[in-house]
Length: 471
Image (tube, rainbow, N blue to C red; front, side, top):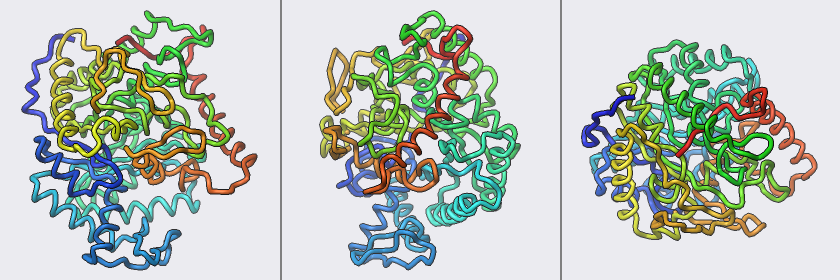
């Protein structure tokens, strides 16, 4: 591609509410920092809305309403249930008022997960459509017109793309009646649509004007090029080696194809983040005492994603360049999940927000060169357990952590978010306390069979991964 000519000041910038601060920070504190840094919008994360609702209840500004279908009824302390739609709508109105006060637009409500692919007339399908109607009411209350839908990671969901597309089309019709849109995002650990090509094919099949794409630097670079389970941090062959030339070619071919084929008007927004090179690598299968229920790329996504140029190593500038190469000049939104937030920033939300904006502008500028690359070139490594090894990268930049029982911290913010995103059966990813572990492991094994099948499809006959690139 020829050199791009993009003026960063002409591109609107957003920061996801789930990507700043710690559980002790209020939504208002987050919005203040985001606004002061010069962002124009936010992604409103459902866990933050839920926390805001609970804060308003504690302050006596709103009251909870009982929900007859709630599995998590309000407690004596006034905890708001995740399906207490009237109370959440009141909180959404409050959030909208705070955003207006700080000149921030609510770009999108997120993350709506494990929606598509459930069998017709199944309880799971009825549940996700009931949830969709609840989220729709929140969107109306908040003045938000876009819903982010992540590609399902449930092995229980159908892999039939026509069915996946039909489900999204039905949801689009539901939202379209209110003038709302769907931004469909590939999650790199998804069971059926882990790549940008996958979600684009499904969007085309859905054939609705109000369905487009949410692209993400991490999800694509982390799926097509990176691998948290290898020593190199890159996709490797079965012999454990990296064919650098093949990786580079596959990655560059994918970027050229994206720039040449995706219509700019079908890209609704681009999310920005990088990833740490995790050392030692994440284990390919969940450990017996790991209750997160996430595959390695899912765990990578939820706790090892810093800002651009803040210790990561993925070729995110390449991806940004490809997206801008389509002619897209819409929203760029910072969505990171950095398990080092407490260590790097602590209480200084303003410094973090300032850095988020500055590094996003830097990314846009660097992506315009003929050889974009991206990341810090692997200069920073994060060790599983939370210790960052600095080898020249910048690590001024995190989430409050808890010990998972094995001495490995896991951010509370990420844990809340993954619970909202759901597990393989559409409920909570965390295995219930006291659950029979042999049964739990069989659940994980069923899930891993799907992963192994997907991974086998990504390898050519020589055993080389079909993807990758070079920083």
